[in-house]
Length: 118
Image 1 (cartoon, helix red, strand yellow):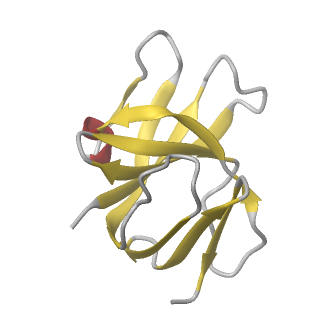
Image 2 (cartoon, one colour):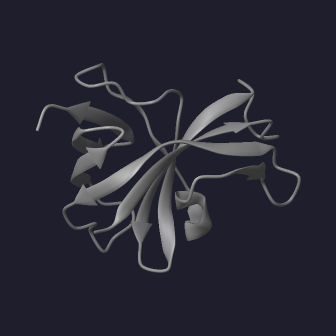
Image 3 (tube, helix red, strand yellow):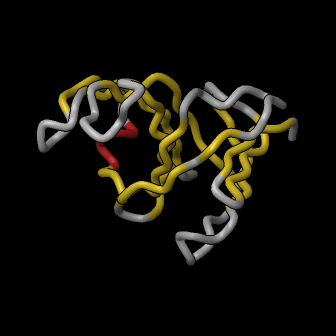
């Protein structure tokens, strides 16, 4: 089963807030990744999801480490697996079922992320 992880990323030079969440979805040899302001909460308001370059699969493992290129610090804070298929197009809508630390139906559409009841 493919895995997901949420990382708390602090000190990124391009992040004026100083802290954001990276949402990683395992996709073959890497992870599709989006920047979120907060951890998605079940049935909460949708939040912006900014696509980021693919991340290495090592970030799916429990770890806390400096980000390469002097881009801050990241720590895995939630993880699990997901059911469903990522679309081939990286800019297409995503709908997956999360199991693990977060549970529910994850939707990423029109640049926003939402977690709802299954």
